[in-house]
Structures are given as structure tokens and as C-alpha cells.
Image: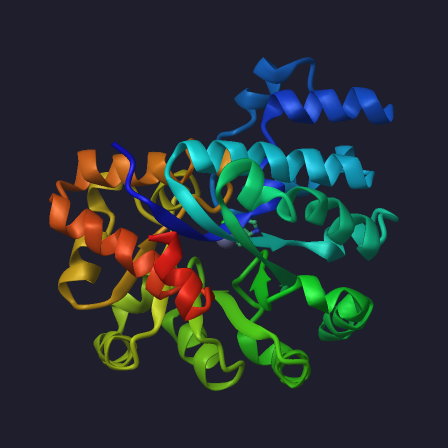
Length: 319
Ligand code: ES4
Ligand code: ZN
């Protein structure tokens, strides 16, 4: 059984499976420093967020054309649909592509080739969220937002990702103000590896309406109380947290305690090709390991639609 659900925390570049990486490498004449898919999978042992990001950025070298981005997104949407995903809000990292000489238009139009057909082809509605790399400068982020302006009819919101510690939300105050002025929705990764203060800052300085991860809020009871009171959704990614060592084991994941505290939690896959599973796999894992009952699982699925950027009528249709 797979519950109908929305996926709200998904990096499209993190859906690049080894098989597709090698296929695109061959198509584009790119040589990967791994003998085969087996050898590449061997590299999927991460000590922390940065060790993952190093590989994540390295493999992006195979993404060069609109068709590459379309194939990547189409493969994700097919897998997501098979696991009960009915709506996906998809992050992309344009700075990682612009830096390699791949234009904003190539990325957005390529992704759109798949997203524009997704309801028909896969029964999955979609939104695109442009993420800024927080370990790059605020000026670079602002230039990226400007480069995206011709494509804003295809972009719902902005997010903030990549290496968190040492790059507090306040660094991007002006960029988020500019995004808000353009009518974009705002989210940000906060409290994955960074401290609870980054979550507070993302809310107060960036005006985010949803927090990606937010795991470390549990270290600050006053912050938990605020997140509950203000009904701020958290997009948790349990298998990601295990693979990137944010938690020691899945059995120790704070999701049950977070639900008990009244937090509006959702379960998502983050970078499924790297972390061992798609949205349904994350649901299965928390069901099996954290002993969540059917009522809790239905609550998580319901939360995913409540926390989404779907219009109210679409929200009803998707369920
Ligand atoms: C990411 Cl798990 C995670 N955290 C921060 N930035 C990211 N980009 C892709 N995956
Ligand atoms: Zn993420």
C-alpha cells in the first residue's frame, strides 16, 4: 500500500541514479572518475553533508542539455508516482550549472519539458523551487535570481541549500527581500547541521513559510513551541539524516517526538539516488523502524498536502 502524498523536499540533481549518470556521460562525452555504476555506488558512504555535496556536485558534470534535465526529471517523476507521490515541489540548483557553463534557460526549459507533461504522463502535479547555494556569495545569489527573471512563470519559490554551517540565513536577507518582491514563495534549509538559531533567523529575517529539515529545533523548547503555534511545516528527510550522520541510527530519529510535540512534520526524500530511497521508501522506513501507527502515517501524508503550495482547489483534487 502506498499512501497518496506530496513530496516537498527533493533536489532534482539528487535523483541522478548511477545508471542514468553513466548513460548521460556517454551521450555527452564526459568521463566520470568511476569505472562503472558499482564503483560509483561504492562512493555513497558519507561522513557528513560536505562529503555528500562533493560527490553531488561532481556528478552534475553529466547534465549538459535540455534533454538531460528532461530525462532526469522524467525518471524521478516516474519513480515518485510509483511510490504514491501525487504532487512534487522540486528544488534545483542553478548556480551549480551556471558555473559549468550551462545556461539558466537550458536548466529550466529542460526540467519543464518533463514537468509540463507530468500530470498527464505520471499523475503528479509539480512546482519548481530555485535554490541558492549558501556557500556562494549573496551577490552570486542575487545575480542568479536576476538570471531567473525571464522564467518566473515556471518558478514558484526560492530556497537555500548546500553547506549550512558558517552560512547563516541573514547572509541572504536582501536576496529574499528581492524574491518576495517578485511574488516568490520562500523556504530555506535550516537546522540540518546548523544550530536552532538558523531556524529562527530563517523565519524572522528571510520570512520563510516552511523550514527544510529543521531537525535541530528539538534542542530549543521555546523554538518548538513557536513552530507549533505558528504551524510552520518542517520537511524532514529521515533516510538523508541517517546517511549524512545527522542522527546515529534511524531508530533514534526524533520524528516520533516531533509529532508528539505537535510539530507539522512531513516526510521526504531529499536526494533519493544517494540516500537509499524515494518518498515511499522513507515512509516505509519510518513505519518499520520508528513504529509509527497508521494514524501517524496518515497524519504525515495529510501534512504533506497541507504544507504544500498547491492552491486550495488543487489540494482537494490531489487527495
Ligand atoms: C542537500 Cl541534504 C542537503 N542539504 C543541503 N543542501 C543540499 N543540496 C542537496 N542536498
Ligand atoms: Zn535538502
